[in-house]
Image 1: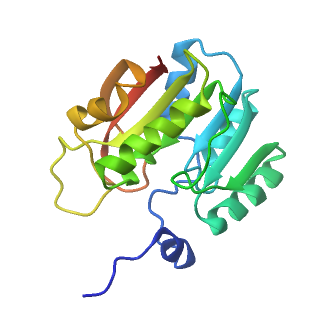
Image 2: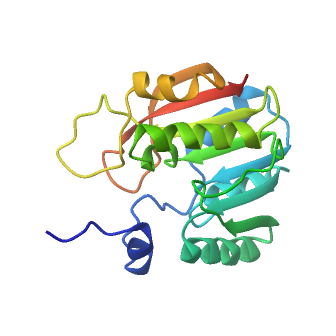
Length: 198
C-alpha cells in the first residue's frame, strides 16, 4: 500500500483544497467582534498566506510560519503582489525551540488538527503557549468530529480532545461550531476555539 501524500507532495501537485486564496470568514468575524486591537500576530501553518495578508491589511504586525517551503514562497509572492509586509518563514513546530512571548495573537486555520498523536497535540499547545505572553490570544479553526462525512475532508477532533490538549495551558473563552470557508460544497464543519493563555 502506497504511503499517503505529504503536504510537500500536495503543494507540488496543486492538490490543496484548503487553499481558498481569501481570508476565512471566521477570522474576520472574530477580529470584528472581539475588540482585539492590531498587535503582533502569528499565522501558524499559514499556507500561501491569505489570512496573514488580511491581518497585515488590518494593521497587525504579522509573521506567517509553515512547514512547506513551497507554500512559504508562494505566500511571499502574494504578499508582495498585495503590497503588504509579512514575515514568512519555514518552521517545523515540532522541532523548534520557541522564543518566549513574541506574539500577542496566534491564529491557525486547520493547523492544530493536522497533528495525529496526543503527544504531538500537547507539544503544539506547549509551543503556542510559549510564543504568547500571559493572557495572549489563540484562535484555532479545527475540523469538527461531530460531522459525519461521506467524502474526504480536513482531519477532525472532538471538543473533548481539544479541551484535554489545551486546558492545562489555556483558558477556553469559547468553542463554537461553525464551518470552514471553502470552494467545496458543502463546506466542512469546524470548531472555532478562542483561547487565552493562563
